[in-house]
Image 1 (spheres, helix red, strand yellow):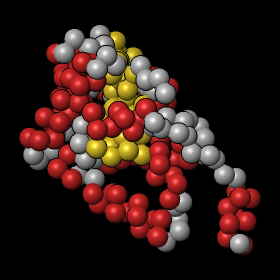
Image 2 (cartoon, rainbow, N blue to C red; image 1 turned 120 degrees about the horizontal axis):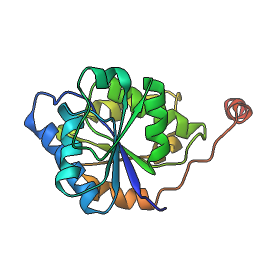
Image 3 (cartoon, helix red, strand yellow; image 1 turned 45 degrees about the vertical axis):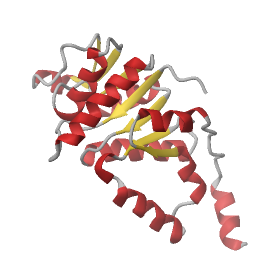
Length: 198
């Protein structure tokens, strides 16, 4: 598949360990140096600021998408070349999904996980066919991966839906998986009922 822009989800805090912000900065650099544009949440603080700084410092193109109320709190990143100001968080998420050809999630808090899960479920029901990646810095997402295994074991999630998610330590480890990505076929509710009767 062709990738021109990569959307990155991450938070406005940096976490307890310096490795998290370092990984965000490096991801931004790697995206720019590989010739991709970065799409992110438009903020200047924490992981968001780090990933944008990495891309800008490497000469990359960056598109930030930020709600007006966060601009008014002086959280917008002023080094970013393209800042799209929207009115709501819902508009922000929709635009970030629309602009990106692939989506990567860095360590973050509840908001970051909410963004990831929205894109994950949208992929499940066929609203997009984009590959999703997780940067597992410091084994941050091991618990989430274990939770997915539990969902599969207890038959709340089909294992094939994990094919849309790639896990790696950096961009280089995710890109080969992105390039070979094949969208998961969408099943109907009737298909699910048949599966339970068989």
